[in-house]
Amino acid sequence: MNDNHEALVAIQDLGESSIIDSPQYRKLGLSGALSRSLVRQGVGEKLVKAANLLPDEYSLVVWDGWRPYEVQKAIFDDYYSKLEHEHTGLTKDQLYEKTMKFVSPPSVDQGEPAPHITGGSVDLGILNESGALLDFGTEFDDFTEKSRTRYYEEQLEQGHKLSPQEQNALENRRLLYHVMGNSGFSNYFEEWWHFDYGNQWWAVSYQEPLAIYGLTNI
Image 1 (cartoon, helix red, strand yellow):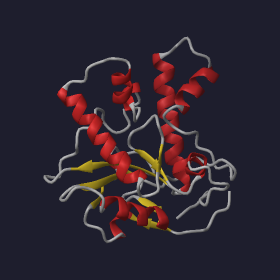
Image 2 (tube, helix red, strand yellow):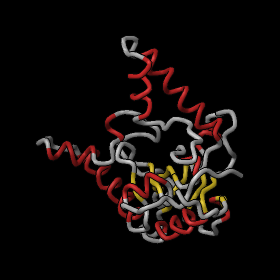
Image 3 (cartoon, rainbow, N blue to C red):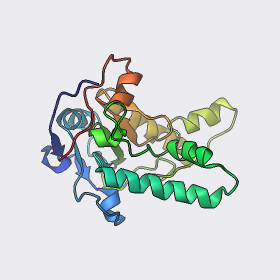
Image 4 (cartoon, rainbow, N blue to C red):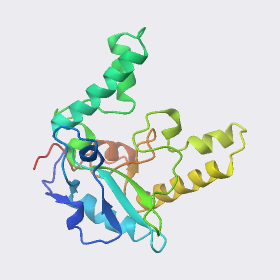
């Protein structure tokens, strides 16, 4: 880890009309959730690049960026409790592992911080020319196998035929994946909406020797 100490910037201050800020955890009333999404400056610059790769009149909509520790902990604890209720036969270690599939532990370890706490993670989708969210096959934070970025490709590889709606969702995921990838982001394969730049997940994906974003705060 070699943090470059870039500042956090607000999505709404990027000066790009085709990037819309819509902080979901604030809307859900989660305690401590921010009223506006923040990301590292380098992430913001790459989001502008990604937005400019979209078809005319399309926009990126950002649901979450940097998270305070207490918000990361609340999301993790809430999902753990949900799984504990649904899977009464699992051990604590099994529940912990299952929770980690979709929510990172609220780590403030300098060597392995939770990705969103670095300011290098962003959750987002795409709006069409009418301002409606494109169909991605699931909602944001739908913690099921259908949220896997390549879920629909995997269905085709297994010999399943996609419905027109599923084919549309596949194409929309591909659009998001490619505009973000071509702008320097990596994707977390379990979540079509989650992308990283500069943090340890990005460094592993791009085989970079060091992450450039570690723990940060407002």
